[in-house]
Image (cartoon, rainbow over all chains, first blue to last red):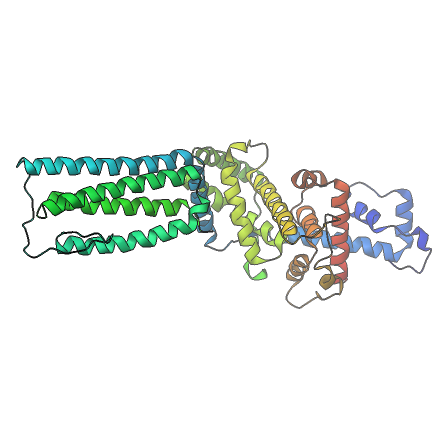
Length: 235
Length: 198
């Protein structure tokens, strides 16, 4: 603030702001009033402050947001809800693992029932035997005598398993040791169920029920792997 | 920023009361997990929240991000809303808090040591008079000048002079001492007056 009069008598900017902010009807002090009456600089500053405040109050208080803002909010809320679910995760993770375990054990039991039923003539294969559908190797590299379509399916399943397994191994560090242990146990059980179904199929390649058990065991193994990789965030 | 400005239609007190009653009912429903009710609240208040976010950040993309954060935080905090302030004031408070949290995070990330609450970033452009008066209208000039204020000064000016909150209300929102807020407000006014000219 410059002055052509007595500088020491000028009102400070804080004092001018206080005057500008004073409620209506509150008069400045006598000394301030006297100074403003004879100092154009301070009076101009005070008028400028008043004008600035008036302009600020006239600015629009509503600005339409972009249309996509609500979609972002909505997805944020959904993510939050999922986060709340994740905070209940020990239950969810164990439930997932337990489900995998039950599925694998159940599959194994169903294999046994199917084999016994077949042996006892209680169940008939919905599919007929296809001549020449015997291959010599499985996805796991073991010698096997599976119908070609199942052997082919097993190769596909093997590729998926390998890919998911690789992803899971990369992200393993982000999972708790107990979760890793449970996943591995579930996978071992799934492998046993697959091996059992394969052995049964090799003895009875035309048994459609066994074929279904065999493929569903693979699918469940893949499901266990997929869900385990989803639990493990990318690092 | 100026291209999206739209003027508000003034409301009378009775309309405000009706709106408040409507808000209360929507808040109650939203508390129960009704996202549709929350969407209605959003539509009722998003323009006021977004305008504040625009002015606090001085940047459109940051404003979108901040406004989104405000409503997500609001959804989380619905149970804490007691109705002793209007929904708009409550949302404004969340916006200010979200802004402060973000700024603190940014500061930590950039490993800057904040010796004062405010800093001089951006002030040079404003102080150098680069916001000369244009023929595009005084309001737009003021908006542009506000956007170039240092963050603390901008926040104080927007909340006090634009939104009309008192120093005490702003102190409550920000957790800053009223002396600090006054200093920031006065600095903002000085910079704006210099930039905008007589």
